[in-house]
Length: 255
Length: 290
Image (tube, rainbow over all chains, first blue to last red; front, side, top):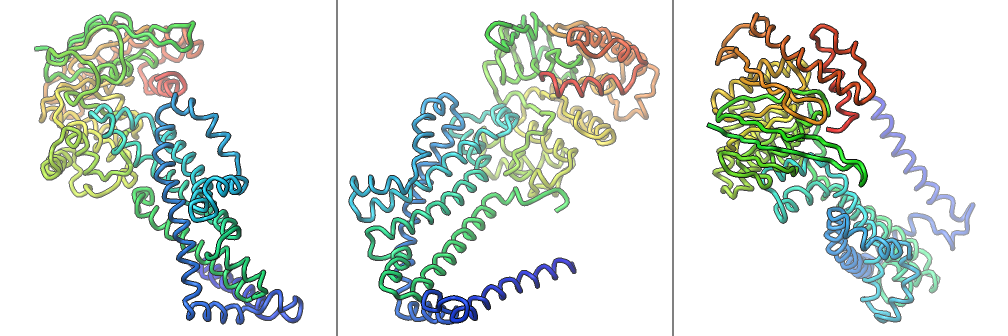
């Protein structure tokens, strides 16, 4: 109990120290035009919020993430489950998928722009590409790690085909699929910012680069902080969803 | 009346394309309706394989009839209890027990009612909403037994169900199983490597030979019908005598399998009937094939 409290206090102190450094070092150690103090950045965030400007960028970024990640999940998870279950299918598609996995989403962005234009579609596809691989691979691994005795047990009670998939394969692989979704979301984030820096007129990534180019440095930091909080929020929401969906994993004997 | 009829069952494994291993060799066996029948044998003799084949989880040449109907695959006329419990960790105890009924297409209300009934039978009322990870080993196996009984199979197949439990829990569950068997009147086929367990539970015990698996001898256990009512039946003269007879039959096979495998020298089995020999078997079972 006591050490837990002490850790808490020190944790808080570390955060405060960092924030204090940001507040008081600009103008003394670093150029405050390039790194304005925290209070000024917070003021800018507040101003952007009251002007409804920040919300607009957040919403657009959120739509892009949700689209790319959603499609990656809808295609990646079932495909991964199939690959995990049917060994021969996995062997057949393994080579092209391994090759595809190695190609960075950013490297393909010029290709997507050529094929799908510079609009929303190519942005959604690049996010999809980044999020797809971890979801696919973790779904495959999830199925491969199912205890064979559970499969025998389900089959002995007449499960097969769809019922085996719904009752056994999907729930057994769920924790692994969730790991894939969280990894996919964080990759999607990285790629989102890059995509919004090329040929976009809105979105948090656009806001970062555009503010820098027009020398609105506090706005740039406001956008970066928003990106950070946005990412943390999404990760927490996914963790929460995961805990809800795999409640049985959190329980242990005696709990 | 025959409940399970096994005729000329032969099973070969091919570990690689060149070597074929004969696991079961022309095995025939008839098990009566309502009988408690034990399969006793050294590790690797194929007794678990035989159980899986009866369960329809593994194929072999020959025929198996359940109440005259040939086995073509898994089916709800047989319920299997595995040594590893094999409960679905994402389902509650109640949902686990109701699983077979769900697969049978029984409506939710009805199957929950049935599942509760069988949970009461195994002494787990009040644990319906728990998850398997919250249960002890003994409780997990009780749940697994309730699950295998809930869909009312003709035959209960048990694959060393108590081998992973501590000695005390094992004895309690053996007694419980006899009580449940007496109450439900199911045909039980029980695989074990423990002589004590086979003698205590079964009406007849088939000793299986070391690989390839054949039936060496079927021994009737001349103990009274209601064993749970007897006090300390394990110390009775009849019990000791049958146990010794089975021990002699089994020890020859352990020597054989030991010689074949290159370990387990004869000394280990010429020791007077003991807990040690089955334990050695258990250890080897994990490293060898199941």
